[in-house]
Length: 149
Image 1 (cartoon, rainbow, N blue to C red):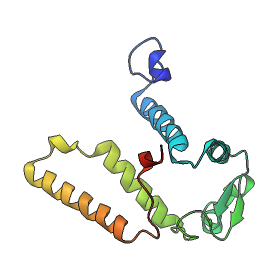
Image 2: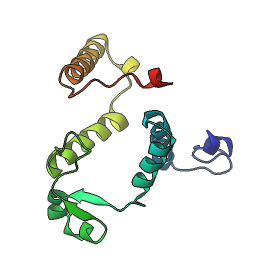
Image 3: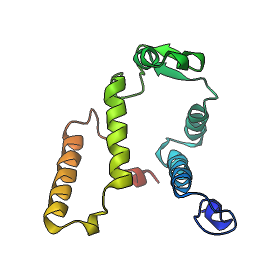
Image 4: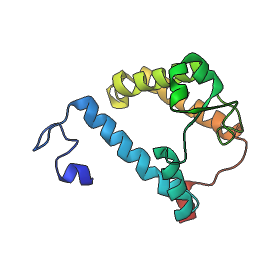
């Protein structure tokens, strides 16, 4: 909101950014704003922000560095990332495919209200099924975020 107040991130105004750059800036602001709400406290929030910024160093799965060896200059290889999914990581092709599909859905799929009734029903059914799957196969119960305040 601070960026919008000074016109940064808008596609019109004193500082007009191209649409994709404005989207990226908005996504970055939203992702950083989630950190204090998800962390256990202020210390954990600051530690997470330090980690996100790379102050604590950068680690990547060894498989990623195998595919992109030039990243070895920036990051240390690890066999797995212990705080990511109970020490399981997706392989590089799987993670890349998931990110590409997600970005394609976000950027190019029509909005829900623009879909036909049948397509809307299919999209909502698939979303519900994935949500139920996430609840039943989660390794532990995570309380709703806002109940902690």
